[in-house]
Image (cartoon, rainbow, N blue to C red; front, side):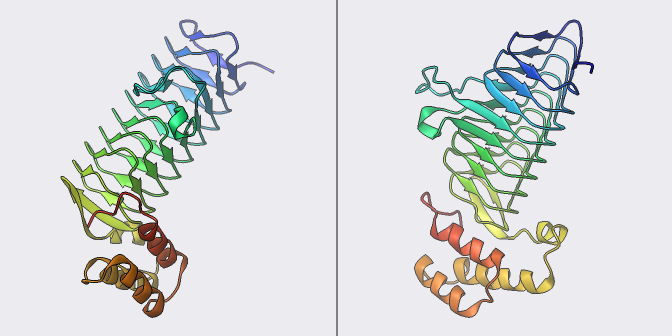
Length: 260
């Protein structure tokens, strides 16, 4: 069985584990504790280092920097890691850092994410599946993106912020508080602008599901109710579904508070 296809100018350290189906382009650098799964393509001049595990079928474009040390003054060389799932696209000059002791030692990226040019995923971030970070989007440390999140170009997300499933952030948004699932937010500082109706449609939410989410949204954010009061009303008046339950639980569980 033939080994990985490694360009003669690439530098792959002893100890790196590359599946036989991996392709490594010119002048790429791969460190000794990197593991790369089948079907992954590493582009020219990409750098992959640290304790980094990369799954199946990823594409890492030229000049991406993956698995480097955190930009955190509290980091003192602890053996943290970066874990990347399957079928992600990491475009030119994107940067992804390993975790820190203060964040559980792991930065994690799920499956099917698209990280466009110059995006940054800082230490201890957790990305779910099918998220899109447009050009220049920046995630501070400990940020959580659930699934199907769209982060607009040149947006910045503050440390420890959570962005819920199927939320969309407009270009240039500065996000300092949590963004609830299924919502649209934009601005500096980001404010809510209703539900992400196009995103819900694309995911196949039917009219009834969207109506119930609209009712929950109105009670939570367009009434004068406090959060606890809105939660009681939603649970009493809105048809229960996974989406409505998740929306409510996300807002209830917010530690930073949600943008409004």
